[in-house]
Image 1: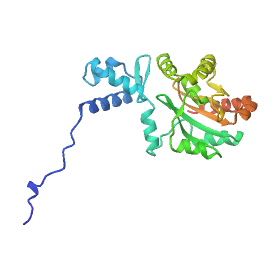
Image 2 (image 1 turned 60 degrees about the vertical axis):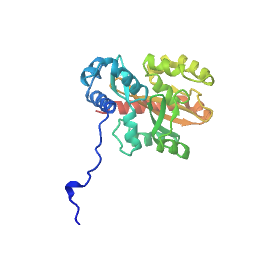
Image 3 (image 1 turned 180 degrees about the vertical axis):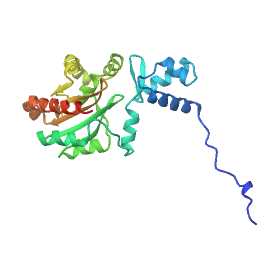
Image 4 (image 1 turned 30 degrees about the horizontal axis):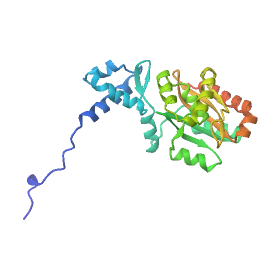
Length: 250
């Protein structure tokens, strides 16, 4: 006996979720906003009371999905990182050829990093050392306070986010925090962090990648503490020269 298609069960209904809908709406609205949106503007856009979305927005900012500057929210770096993990590479100001050029000039590991919430991720590299290729290709989280790239990225944090992060660090990082704070003004002025001696494994010289007045990433040259110490000025000059080139691109 043939089955009557009209009596066969259809696919299960995929039900919407109010909180997920609201979260998606918040992300889409800030993504479409060139100047970012205030909490009040977001509440109006998603047709919800400020009190009902404040926790959601704070949570998205804490995990890197939103970025807050001067009480305005814009899209954070976490969605960008998810695209990279999924293999959907996005166009950035620093392409792989820039890293290859720097590496050819210095012979040392060259990295491109971004900050997502409270971690550093290496998203591209040119290196003879398998360790850094592994870290970059697998998007392994690194410590902001224990890398020169992290110091450059931290220097662009808002006061609130910076203090929240630094106060969350364990006692063993206290000395690093003190040295970072002593160097903070200079890093903000120059965009460069040279040989901060933050790691027992290696040291580095890093420079900020800035777009629209904000630090979006860091380019680093990494080597042994001895080599970085010996070549610190040379490597700094090399990164500054490359920054002038990528900043002059249209």
